[in-house]
Length: 106
Length: 250
Image 1 (cartoon, helix red, strand yellow):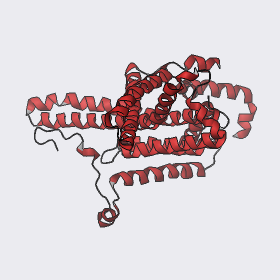
Image 2: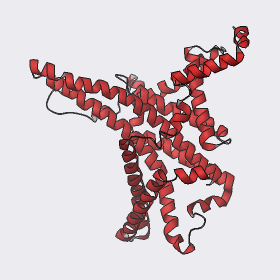
Image 3: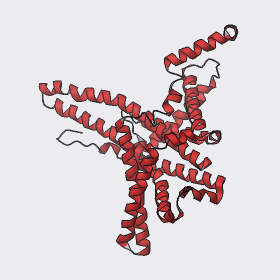
Image 4: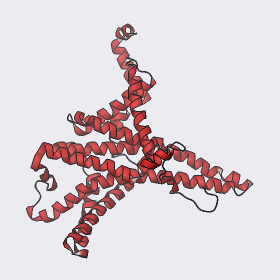
């Protein structure tokens, strides 16, 4: 078995590479790495953007609520942190959609 | 289940104790049961699959090797050479979530990743690890992460809270994404399956009409298989990206 493989060494490697490519065995790992982020469906991107926006807001509201009950200033810090949370959500979305070019040039 | 006109789409996510009186006394639910099965299957695959140690792998060995290779490559690509250190963690996380998602699609089983308690625990582990790694490598310098270099100093009061909230929202978005995807899929299964039963109750026309939701459920199963793999991949890859940030601090 191993002798046979040694005989047509280079050509076997070539044929193996061709066969693997044809079966899609080589393509997925490098291919999957990018499409999952960039080439996602419109629905997938929409879902992720929504999740990012909401989760930042949830965290900010939780922090605002907790700080308010700590300092006894019920509505004010919550109001401030809702705004900050919205900003953080937009920052998340910006990071999600924008960083491809700077990351590549770096 | 759908005997009346109600569709009980969320009942499937309720936890019930299994294994009789023993399970009841320790609160061993079907969720814990599935986690145990997933862990046993993972270890079983690796142990049994790799026991042959063949040069030309058989089916199980090929599966085990591809899984290992896939996560290993992902770690190195996303984190860099240091990624090898985190490979066991990412591999465990990936296989646990992947098997949870996939096993949940089998009849009479339960998708433990459809509970936010489970997904948030996983995300919390990730974020604590990432913060710990960053503090261990960079020490106090880690906190410069919250104030990007070159930003005007008089905006610090605005940038720092926003960056901190953005950082803390990572585990939340990580857990909500996985949990929401799994819940949505299983609810859709339940709703369409209820339609089939309801249609069947309407006589001959219903028997013919019931083919529609049945076909939809078949298509949905294919889609859910994709979602199960994709969400496990997304969770693992985001963990890697956060680890990259922790190791390199941009």
